[in-house]
Image (tube, rainbow, N blue to C red; front, side, top):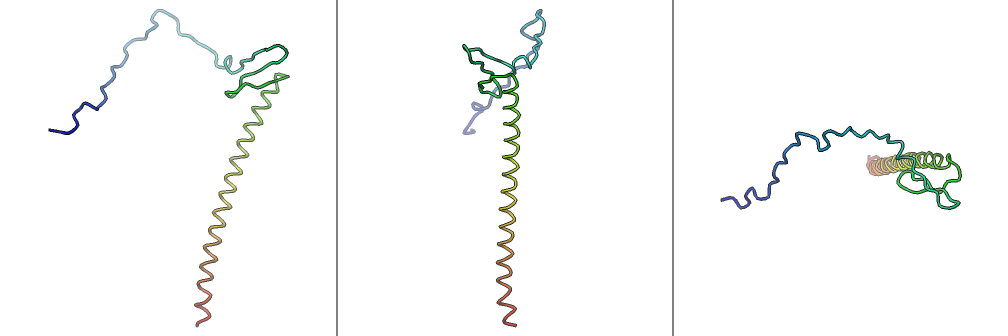
Length: 110
């Protein structure tokens, strides 16, 4: 008698054989319509971009902000990669220096 039966196994989910909206046309929406959402509140205009609301005076302000944020992220990644390379090189240098220091006393004894 097994300790755990098939009680904890998940049951198979039956596949759907037909769509729920038979008889209705398939909805085709342009995704670009949802990327450019703007909101006017009195004299301020807000635009929704990259998951945040940004205050914009001109239409190009938000586009410039998104471009600069992408550039900033790319530069941060490049900076992190350079820092990692420097750390690896310093580790290699320290290891090589310790190996040389170990060999020097051996050479003096000869």
